[in-house]
Image (cartoon, rainbow, N blue to C red; front, side, top):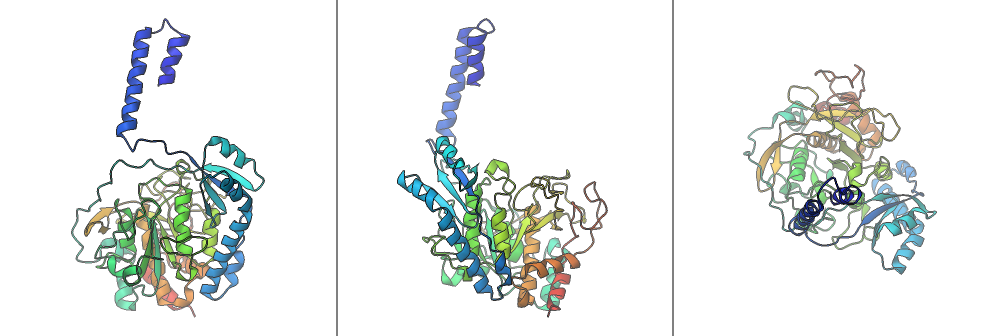
Length: 479
């Protein structure tokens, strides 16, 4: 606005009186100063960028390792050693000039605190594939107030739980998800909520290896926004709200304020592969034998957060190679076709989930394929699940009804937990688990749209609607 006013004044002086022009400019500047002082936290917070190296480690051999702990250790050791070796020269340069940076291994990359001139330097280095933005939100002037729900605790399993047959798995098959660890990366978790507290893996052993907060550094499970508490409740909440109430969980904060960046997402994904103490180092102190079994990722990383279509692909591929099942919500960019556009949901190495309502119709907001951003023309989502009018836990011992594909994905996470609990031979067998989910899915019978083409799978509803009861029965039959 100031530039436009200056252009009018100096290039067409007769178009507007100078006094009025300069007065308008002064008003704009005063408004900008007021925003600077009163909105957000005043100060200069620098700039960060994300450097992705060309040489990404190959951990595909992990799939042939039978022992789960050995498989996880192989992936962790291979990735960290590769990153240490290939980043060495760049790290030495940054150390020499006292420039702060954060190395990553799940994607061979570094987040660097520096200005545009150094960005140009890094882009020209032979090890570097590309340099992306790593945007950070300015700190808030005061802590946010914790969100609260407005519903009482359900007295019976809600419609979404009965629709996929999870309650029948508990009653008829006696399976609740015991022995399975769910990794939850989201806005956080209210660890004191009665539906979630009994399932926290650190309830007796402590928060080390079980909780990480790269945003605010909280030392115990906390959630201000409520999104993470809600999604985790659908996965394993007690009192009938969770698909797998016998499973345990570990948590990480990757989206406390609803705009993240590649580094924050990787902080949590690395923690899920190899948890470490709260004051530990992801490269040196990770313990892959404590890894999560199945991950819930009810988030996406669009360009505004610094991601390009392939920025997190090595991470998704490595987690699958390690035998960790990654479930990703498809996104809320529908109803247009080719609206499933954000990592991780676009990748073939994850299981992507769209949303339906209680009438069995595809939710208008649910993102559709085909995936075009990475040139794969991949059919997505893989499956659909309840994603509207979903009642689950919310901070402050409350409950709330929410809608979104974020609510749909947790149903599949819980179903995988039930399957692996029912038949531990399937733990880490991503291909077989995915095959069962696909083959036992109920046919989608709701309203069709232009993205489905009447085929199975299709770019609206994938292979159909998840059926937890049928999937667990099929899992029990695997020898």
